[in-house]
Amino acid sequence: MLKKNNSTLIISVDDFGISKLANENILRLARYGKIDRVEIMMSQNIMPSHVTELLASGVALDIHLHLAKGSLDLWQDNFRKSSPGTIQRIFAFLFSYFFGKNRPKEIAKEWEEQIQEFKRLFQKNPDGISSHEHIHFFPSYFSLVLKLAKKNNIPYVRFGKYWVKEKNPACLILNFLKKINSLIFNETRFDSTDLMISFNWITDFDKFLQNCPSNKKIELVFHPEKTNEFEFLKKLSLE
Image (cartoon, rainbow, N blue to C red; front, side, top):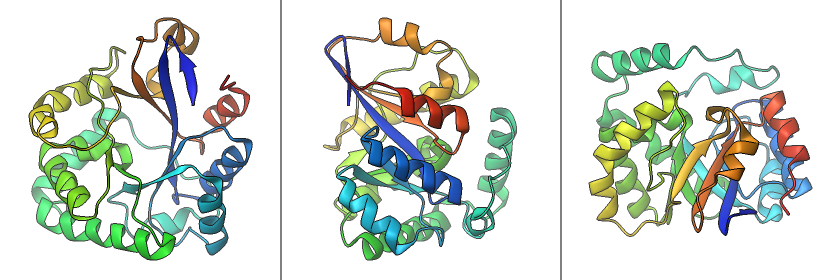
């Protein structure tokens, strides 16, 4: 954990299981003692040796729910292609939500299966719950995730109690969804951080640290499959 202005910065890494490169980089960072939480996408890209090493690392292991079933295995040996921009992803998601296969009833079954697969593989409950590209912030999915967390005794939900001040489309959208979801979340007893922010939303990391709010618990989200983020974490001092 990184300490700044009496705040605790939790280093969380996303997308273990999405590709061979992501797995290798995350395991290396775990060996270096650079990370606090690993978000795991259930797929055939997770080997028994990965499970053993992750459990031995002592980091928190979270279920990283996704809608990419059938696609992940294609990325085992290669760096996956870059995702389209935020706006394109939103339109694709909404189209699939209203007209495709991503309606909540179907997703509830899929995500429950992913959680059960996590339990089978790791022989434990997930330490936390999140989702690929933060889709659990979508209100219908958010209530679903809270129900799944309660049913499966998952204590931590990626949410963040305060708005992110960075100016980019992803932050603006998540801030809006957070406002909608706050009432239902505040009625629960799940643990979360005061602030959740992705590294690629931050335009100036040094400035972010200098202006870091005091006495808060902050989840910093990284994607080590990306070379720049992996190299940044390797050099990051947690002192």
